[in-house]
Image 1 (spheres, rainbow, N blue to C red):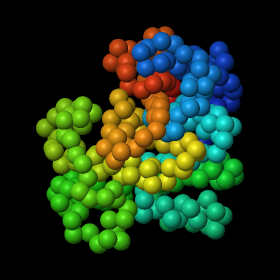
Image 2 (tube, rainbow, N blue to C red; image 1 turned 90 degrees about the vertical axis):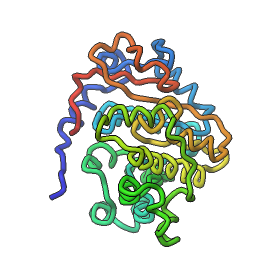
Image 3 (cartoon, one colour; image 1 turned 90 degrees about the horizontal axis):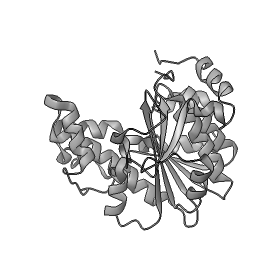
Image 4 (cartoon, one colour; image 1 turned 180 degrees about the vertical axis):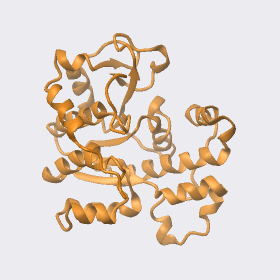
Length: 287
């Protein structure tokens, strides 16, 4: 049975956080990458010049999702944009487009696409807003079964795939540097459970998201990419692959972190992104 979470918690939270004023600041605080407190308007102004904006979220945090919608609406007001989502895999993108075009309904989307368990509460509002406002929205992530194949057998495990399936992945072989700090952090975090193949599985996700971002980036139209913060923190992950693929354009990054005290940004979070959303750890998560 697919897990469906009640929306009451998120709805109540959004009612309470009715503005970006003083009440919201008890729940989150915005910082620049060097740890200085920042106003929301400052970030909006800064994002106006960006070709690509990475919104690094905490997947289970309702504040992250609420602020994503705020950012999308702000950037939309400055012109057309494209949204890319880690949460939709490339082999499901055609069905997402059918939904966006009104060719299938929500029930069909739910049956055809591998939606995340928290899709209804955390991502459907954004997708439906984009649909209603005719904002191009695409899935960018590698099909998870291919990341699993790499985890078990390395990059060479993909060599036998037919071309029709390779079309859902960044062109092979992908560039790969296991010395990237965030990849090394994976191994440290996993301890005895880590392996070079685990890092490779992460890399194929980053490479694929970068590839399809570039493929769908339209001149003069900002591209907002929504992903777990780990995929874009410190301008690594997806951004490393954008640079490796020769992307030229202004990139700005946003990350989300959780702290027990949000009055000052902890040193460990400095430099993660151009702007950092520091969220009170007491905020109830969606799963």
